[in-house]
Length: 415
Image 1 (cartoon, rainbow, N blue to C red):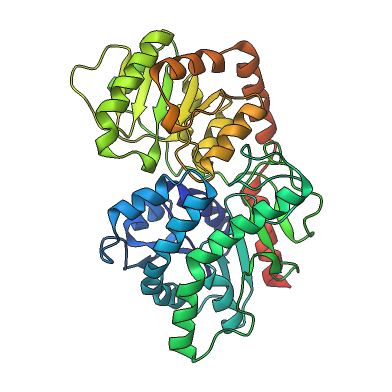
Image 2: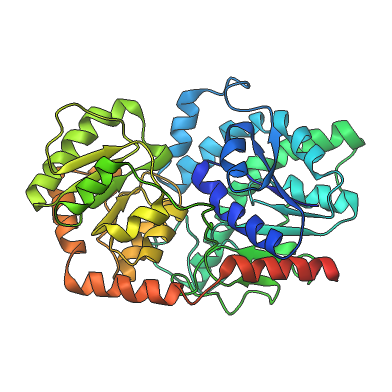
């Protein structure tokens, strides 16, 4: 049994589901260990699940602190919020360790470094699986600094020290407490494990297209990046009839959705802003995950949730918060992006979209107005942006990141 340790929101689980699907196709038993709220979501893809019973609600995590973590828009704020949240990790570490017992290999998210030390303790291989490039390189800036600072070899290396430091801060204290309580002393190799994946028995795998961020040449040969890990949907999505009618009765709309970073108190202001922007740009829109208002204008359709895989190639452009998974889905669909980053690595994907010529200039949420959004929509729909987006999608379609990384993982087991 291969166990994948996963954390984050719904979108964070999807690439790991894709990796699990490919491992199953290659004949391996695999399960994902994660928060119990996502059990139904994961099992819907016929992937086994190990539910972690402790969660933010049962631990009484301060909702204001969670909000701060979701809106940290610079490295210092990220560091402070990660530091505040670290004390809650200890309560779930024992459950994640239990999920590792009996496994033949551990795959772990970079925020769950317990996976590395558990595998070492159990005498089995571990694989670092990251949803973004995170290993040190002189060639490009990390996702917490990309687009914010000028790229130089020195600044680039420092930016990866910062990224890895924050991820390590989120998990080291919980691992330390658990290990001392359970085994009496710290692991002999206690420290950041990210740069230790340097041999074929302990590789690192990255979910990112080489046409978005090319694999750095100064990475060691056991860090593997072959493309995004896209989920294979189990069944054909059947959309609501009123959504189909909306799509079929007018120009292609703009998709607008902000995933888990959207909060209810923002609803009225954001709805008004989006309605104004669509009116000013003369476009129709599909608003997703922001609740529903009565008496919406005829050019807008609101829906709670929808498959990005099904919808994105049916719209004119995608406007979102810049989550890594949503960004990848937009790139894959071959449509322009309008990214409104709220926090963390979202700024990097917004800047990268613009730099690749497949999207509008980033609009940080604090600067968002209806005029700016309308202008960005019109910019994104220029022929050159549309054509660049289609070209990027054709390139991404040549990659099979999840399959290739699954093969790397099985090769590490054989060795």
